[in-house]
Length: 155
Length: 155
DNA sequence: CCATTGCTTATGAAATTTCATAAATTTCAG
DNA sequence: CTGAAATTTATGAAATTTCATAAGCAATGG
Image (cartoon, rainbow over all chains, first blue to last red; front, side, top):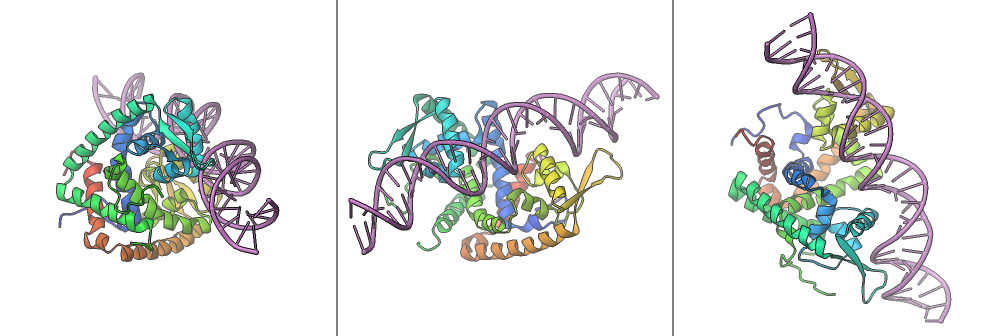
């Protein structure tokens, strides 16, 4: 086994704490792409909404909040801004008048498509940078964790 | 029920996107513990600072910001509140008068110790629930990614 | 029906975070 | 030594997020 921590002695609690390792790995890897978003003037929450709607149009506000890891009032206000900026539009649901469905505008589609392409390229770079077997296994592992975590009762 | 497919044919871009899977897994698992924090009236950023100082006293403001995945001005203001609440104190560095070193107060130590215990318990529960995470040495995997990601030049 | 309960989105005030920049040191080249 | 550059923390205004709750609609039981 190679030496994983060359700098400080791993006396810190967090260096052996799964939740922290997950958060830090996620943050580190995402930061690179977030820097690309920043250059294009797109915030992370906006990117998440755009990405969530690619391949899944007509999400509800609550659904988007869940997928984007945001709270519902945060999503409502984020959508206000995205509507203002012409990225998405709100549509009413046919069956339930409480529900608001969100769809990309033409501009939103164009920007999403471009960003998704950049994201795929970046993901490929990341996977190339890390040992392939590990990275590929990681995706399945994460999917499993997400599935089990999302519904602890069922299976 | 529009489509109750349980195995989710990945139509959505994000369902096969590594950065999203990492973020979602991290968020889902952490949310459970964050709920515990919430009941105790401790915010996530405060918890991160407390946890960061356990086993690593005298961190600098910038160092804490990095470890806690926050920006430096955010950390400065977070520390203002934590000092106000008697959780940490600022100390000056012996060699460099620009540097502010942060240490836990007695109260901060007590709360940290309690929370770290709860965190360890929760981590054990999570690992018990996700046996394959343990089997695959997820922690080592993440540590490897963090190490490689942190310094892309070295290896 | 009607009342009750639950679900979905919106809103307002307060708290937090961000962005840009200032202020105070330290470091370094010459 | 001196001035420029780099580093570290703090600050202020603006933007965003959060918390609690309101408002509207749907579903349910009696």
